Image 1 (cartoon, rainbow, N blue to C red):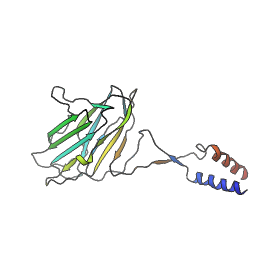
Image 2: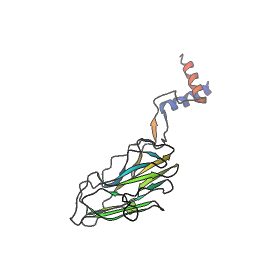
Image 3: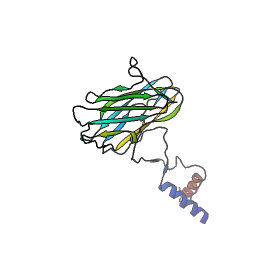
Image 4: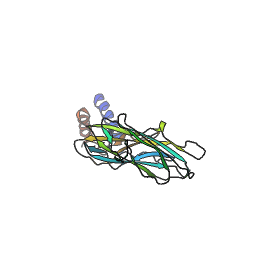
Length: 225
């Protein structure tokens, strides 16, 4: 009887906290709302096929503060992805620049090392940006695998008129290169943000197996069910 009671107590503990580790393969997670100035990336694709393209936008939000320049460095796995040149007629590889206020000081891609550098400044003074897409990167899948594309916060900045860097948040995206194109919500990781690693299991018995399932059966029998 003591053995059954001990087993019952263990099973009840399992039922009281019906959670399981949740490690989605690049599934959707919702980060905490970004409250400070940020440089982030957005995309509506999680994965692509080999030889297929996907686009990623670089988005700046200065949170109502005026900036006079910005510097963005993106790093990616060059074994999995390559950047499609936005201006083939111009020497060297570049990404598409979308901003019409700041002037480009640097727009370069190092395909061998997987590094993108974008720098821009304004001779007209400062301006505040609210979720403004300033550039677009087109990636092509090279070989099968999973890799991250990341805004390197250490080498990125949002400079105010008095040359103060106000950048607080950056993010990264997990991208899968597979045999065929996959279009799902991407995993977005924001620096300094905590994410849930476990989700509740709505079924009490659905995921209880083995000895735990047997003990649950004994418990139900002992209760007259």
